[in-house]
Amino acid sequence: MNPETMTVALGDRSYDIFFGREIYSLFQEWICRFYPGGTVHVVTDRNVASIYGDDIQRWLAGIPHDVLALPPGEEHKNFDTVREIYGFLARGDAGRDSLVVAFGGGVVGDLAGFAAATYLRGISCIQVPTTLLSQVDSSVGGKTGFNLPEGKNLVGAFHQPRAVFIDDAFLLTLDDRNLRAGMAEVVKCALAGDAELWDRLLAVGGKWKALSGEEWRWVVRRAVGFKASVVERDERETSLRRILNLGHTIGHAMEKSGGYGRLLHGEAVAMGLAWEAILGMKLGVTGEELVDGLVSLLIGMGFPLDDPGVALTSIAAAIGMDKKRMVSDVDLPLVAAPGRCELRRVPLAEIRRELPGIRAEIRERSIARELNIPAGNAVPEESPVSNLVHVGDEVYEIRPVEENVAPAVPAEAGPEIGKEQATAVEPESEQAPSEIRAAPAVRTVTLADLYWSQGEHSTARRIVGEILRDDPANLRAQAWLAARAGDDLVEADLLAFLETMAKEYGYDLS
Image 1 (tube, one colour):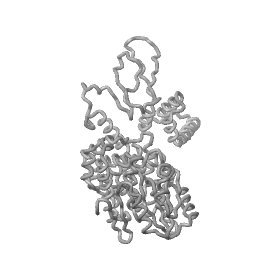
Image 2 (cartoon, one colour; image 1 turned 30 degrees about the vertical axis):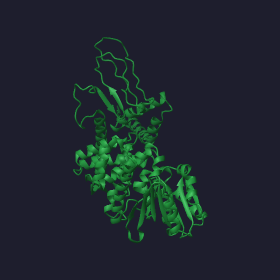
Image 3 (cartoon, one colour; image 1 turned 30 degrees about the horizontal axis):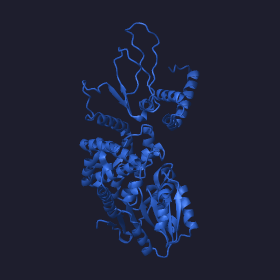
Image 4 (cartoon, one colour; image 1 turned 90 degrees about the vertical axis):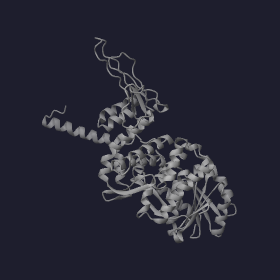
């Protein structure tokens, strides 16, 4: 391997990965050399085409080609989009000597790769990844496919590209959110098999965006190099390659449960890494110090580690549809040490049983890091934050009930609070001073989620209903209610049944 090229050695399916800045001339030369008489069919998405559409035309000048720009986003990673690609290839008279160019992020790479794998029983494809996530992960290894409503990537094929062109200039057009999403896969690679990369990430921490150009290239190459080495030893994921699924079992469940498009893939993977590390700790595989370091690193990078709007029941159901499931078990990679994973076959029931405890631990560790105290330690009484309670993203001040104070409102917690402001219930009377005043009724979606997780569904729904009464346009409250629409029907049916039984047999349902 030289500084600009890396080879994935797979016999007659071997291919080169080219690294560089503005490597379009190499891209053009490669196509002219290996596909001098075939047609070129570029698949991209509309966002990428709006930035690089003219460049694609210029790079392929003189080469017969056409371009298809798909709607962007994970929500379009489905068979309808694959059929659109099939039609594009058919209209362009693509043949066995044609070349598909996947020019875009991971969704484009997976869809175009799958179409190439299955059209005419397989035609050649190359990957030109334009996001950090696709550069360090999905463009290498030959995994292609699309989502079903029942689960992520449930339909797919192994189809190795003929070449991969990784140009770090593409990263200059990414926003912070998409750039950060790619870092989740870098963290995964470091944990799964590159201790030196892990140490570098810990040293950089929350300042990862300040990496120099050469440091970026080093990070990308280390992540790609690790993945390539795993693919060479286990191309079709029969054993070793399963460690690359680290963080993806719960991560994919988060993606599916929230609705594709709510979370970026990398954001879901970051959550999965944290949740699965805590599961590994509970199973005696992962050390607490490593969990502390991982949680601190991910929060420092700017990742949320939970999506409170996603119910644990939905996550549990989605894990049951995971393609890594073996009957009633899941093949789960767990981190034993930085750079070393262990594959464990864990009963699905055990994973589901641990989910509430994992979510509680995630919240506790997130709060502890915000307050700069060790996870699990009580806040000293004399601490200035000892009278603060964190519920999700919000902070509330606790005052003695005897104290005559103004209605409580959430303490300063950033812009996410939006319109979910606290309100107060007026005392019913002003009788004796010794009488305890009514506690303020705080109404937020986060608090509703907390009540829901504790089984107090009616209270949770009442809170959200009151939020929507005061603010009908509150998107977070609308999403919360929509996610539990089915549960409303079940409870309504149950209540109707119980009322019928009470009337029939004279039961007291109080």
